[in-house]
Image 1 (cartoon, helix red, strand yellow):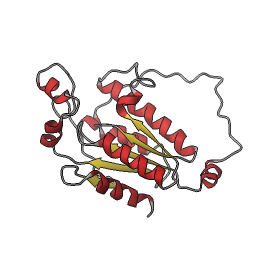
Image 2 (cartoon, one colour):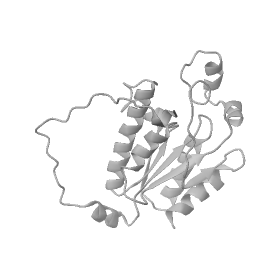
Image 3 (cartoon, helix red, strand yellow):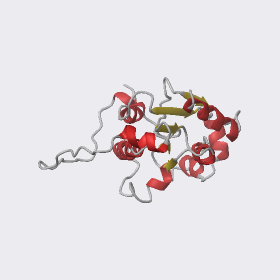
Image 4 (cartoon, helix red, strand yellow):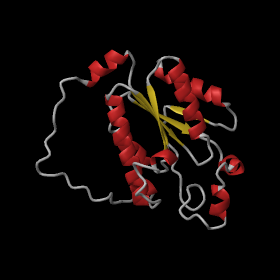
Length: 207
């Protein structure tokens, strides 16, 4: 049984009985028209050290330079605020991705191009986020960089700690990473420079 097939339980969330959905007068289409752009969620996934944050930041800068209104959600950054109450267990990771997916959905609804840089190791979690969006709004960019390269970079010293047993449940070492089966974009940052990665992702937005 793969990790994607294993059941997990998200944190208990009870919808109040008096919570009724309020329909807004301004539609998502009208917001996008006002901004004159196609809202998207660009989801960068891959091992730690594969270059997700670096590519995401460069992409955000490129979009900004081209007059495209965007926002970057980074895996480490959201754990300083929105998700600071979550750990690294399988269930907490699932909840981490669910919350980010909901935030990204709101941003896309507002007409923005939102860039999400998250390891997001399980296919089921990435599929859960994809299912939140309309067809064509979700772009999965898989940074298919070999583990040996990622570990050699080790920009935060996490692999060294994981190998020493200091960090438990570390993706690629003690925890699995499930490769995307049909990503919109595949990038190997051991072979491609940052600019080429940005160009490859950018090209999917103008198709």
